[in-house]
Image (cartoon, rainbow, N blue to C red; front, side, top):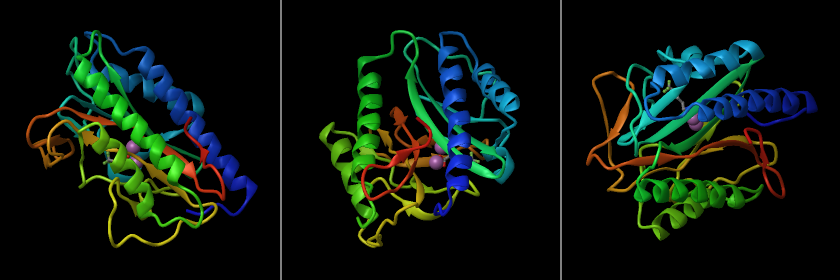
Amino acid sequence: MSIETEEQLEALRAAGRVVAEAIRAMRAEVRVGVSTRELDEVAACVFARAGARSGPQLDYGFPGTSCISVNDEAVHGVPGSRRLEDGDLVKLDVTAELDGYYADACVSVPVGRAFPGYRRLAEASRRALYSGMRAARAGVPINEIGRAVETTVAGYGYAVCRDLAGHGIGRRIHEPPNVPSFHHPRLGQRLTHGLVITIEPIIAAGDGEVDDTDDGWTLKTRDGSCAAHFEHTIVVTDTVPVVLTA
Ligand code: MF3
Ligand code: CO
Ligand code: CO
């Protein structure tokens, strides 16, 4: 969506605060031995207290409140009985709907003494997100976000999972436009003031190819390499973006 009124901005800010609070609370519970279902229950509690609902559940019938993906699981992991182990990298991807407005964010969190390589991969994704946000300004072609993201990721020697992209958001989880994490040659349309989008570099230590899995939700890297993912929901302005999920 594109924001037209103060009320819309306030409603989105409120949804963004719920997402940020859920991620903060979940992250505090990340430890060796915790199950992904237990982490998801933390998100469910925060949502319930705030009067928010799960975006993935609402829009897609996702069987969980949040998407929790571990190691080679790139995105859309279903919370369940899996227990986190020392060295894992867990991705907490949270989308809230509050009073009809949506916000979406993700962090990658090392578990215990995570492998240095996993920490570096997570750092690359986080830095790529911030590169993308710095590029996102009214008047700039949308594919400049992807160029900035991809340049940062390539600098670390990692690959963007090209099948997975950021997106418009606001009244649903996924709205136009598509916001790829690479320089897509045909996405030269210009960003406009008030446009609400996510930027979300999903990157891998291998070639970045992903496959469906048997649960019908989780996408895994084809080569089994670890994936990392950071995401924010932002509002495009004439200067720096407003970050709704910080
Ligand atoms: N949070 C995801 C995103 O960043 C959306 C998950 S919806 C699902 O786009 F149903 F596929 F899980
Ligand atoms: Co998300
Ligand atoms: Co998203």
